[in-house]
Figure 1 (cartoon, protein in one colour):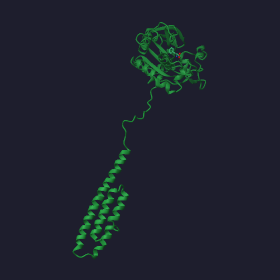
Figure 2 (tube, rainbow, N blue to C red; figure 1 turned 180 degrees about the horizontal axis):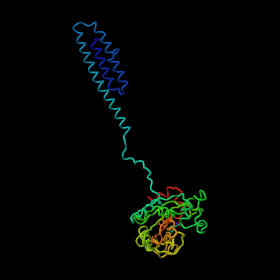
Figure 3 (cartoon, protein in one colour; figure 1 turned 30 degrees about the vertical axis):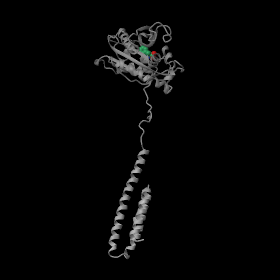
Figure 4 (tube, protein in one colour; figure 1 turned 90 degrees about the horizontal axis):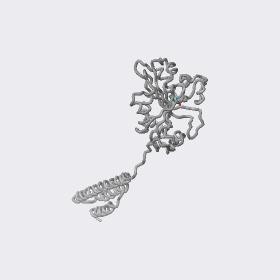
Amino acid sequence: MTLQEKIADLRTRALETLPKIADEKTLNDFRISVLGKKGELTDILKGMKDLSNEERPKLGALANEFRDEITGLLECKKSEIEAAIIAKKLENETLDVTLPGKKVAKGNRHILTQTTEEIEDIFLGMGYQIVDGYEVETDYYNFERMNLPKDHPARDMQDTFYITSDILLRTHTSPVQARTMDAHDFTKGPLKMISPGRVYRRDTDDATHSHQFHQIEGLVVDNNIAMSDLKGTLDTLVKKMFGAERKIRLRPSYFPFTEPSVEADISCFKCGGKGCNVCKMTGWIEVLGAGMVHPNVLEMAGIDSTKYSGFAFGLGQERIAMLRYGINDIRGFYLGDTRMSEQFK
Ligand code: PHE
């Protein structure tokens, strides 16, 4: 074979092999074996020294042509392989936007919180301030300032958890009455507040009793506050919460810190007053305790009971939520079972 023929032969083989190469490593090995320092072309060109002066440049030109051709093809092949790699990668990373997404579990506020906020909104609309009290209270504020001296028999109804003989878990939100009266500056206007919060009693838990529950205290103190103000306020509350058709009924009751004291009933929102299982056939549902602030309670706060008067009320969020949503076990509020809370989204 002449050198020309050898180059032609190498070209034929190269053109045959190239299209079959599919990865960079093989391509590189191929380049080295054909065009490399120790490759076949170099080997062929070693024979140049035996050529005549005329033929040598011709073979040189042929070799260059061959080198350029193969180099060009190698470049193309390289881009082809790279493009294939990218295409493969893209294919593997494809997002199927039609696949259903992962659901993010979304929580919701506890039904007692929702009830509390709803009542807060109603009273904010009537110009009340919302006050926080202490769950850990003193005997003084929880009982004595509420006109329940040490040996008062009504203390029996509100036994609680004692931390010391003077510090206890509050049995009602009423101590906030005394605390806000102490702090209020009456030259700046009337005292109108509600105070929601948790309260405690020494009770054995069952479907209708819980050793902890929630109350909202309400208090208004000003000149000339009368029973009619209390009734009008409660009327507004129940109509906003239970519907415009609801009526309110006050029954005489007893609390040491109010005089007179009442229990407030609303006309049954389920049967409208005819009698059903919710109202126990009476047509009325008891929702809260209330009354005119006892003069002793005003005086203990340094308020002149001959010039000022007030009304107070206390309602329980659990009871309201149980009535409204037909919840029949108070313990459901505290067990943290999401099947309970999810119903009130
Ligand atoms: N503190 C009373 C209770 O827990 C409720 C109440 C509050 C009654 C204010 C009258 C006035 O039962």
